[in-house]
Image 1 (tube, rainbow over the protein chains, first blue to last red):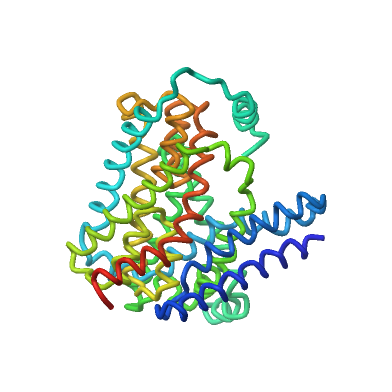
Image 2: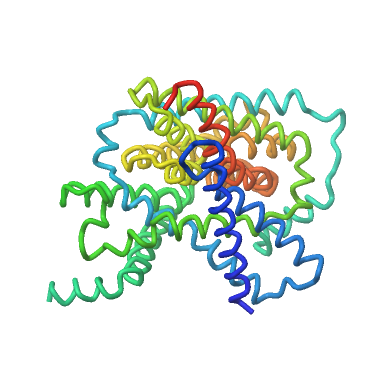
Length: 140
Length: 255
């Protein structure tokens, strides 16, 4: 049932938020320490467990994927309620932070793919099959 | 008429927000398709448009909550608030398959590690140079340089102010747009022509929309490899930025 999926998502989010708050108190940070990340790990674990049990039905999945699919629109809503007027007064911080980051990460890509290059090209058949499905629009 | 509309939006705030955001998304995807020929992903345009609307709202009302300060659009505060946002972001982890994760291997792990630490250091250093010297603002802007999701998630977890959150989101979006546009131009120089470098690239750049958009314009066959590592980026960022990173920054600068 769809509600079971939504409920699992809710429970993971709640436990994550609770553990994040608890961790904040323990560490004396007075904040939520990594709650969303913890919730994500719980959900990944929950999914693996349900898969093994063969209980990952279409309805169940739908209850979670609906919310996952809405996340960009929700981020857009979030963007529209920020104090952008005050942020703009902050100056070109966005351009600098974003620009330097991208240049450095491009450089790191070049270095990393050079250092980690495999001695010979190994064809990953599973990956190729997946790539083909993505291209044909059958998978994400 | 105006009164009726206000009452409608008062009683249906969240529903109103769905309709408004739907319209923004539609316009953005039209712009993406017809004005940028798909070069810039619709989602990035939509977030920029969201920020622009927040600016317009702030100018009109003089308030601090962007478009939500206009009574007609107050429902956006609920849809875009921390509760529903975190709920939806957690849901995205459902698509992560542990078996897939193992395929990324050591290269993926190294790329993800560097790709999380490097932007954070750059972001928080730039923040300091602009006078944001408190641990919360530094962490939030640094997190925004990881991705535009990690930024606000971190910001609201540790209690950042709204202008800092806006800067953090904008930094992440700007990064995503740069990756989308810039990737095809630098692809050859940085050796982006095989699945392994695409996986390294995905882990380093993080932003899923940026990576998939950039790779699609470079060589569509590389998209799934880049996306494979990039999808872990936001989750890892949400885990370490408001915890380990924040504590480290706080230990260095205090308060």
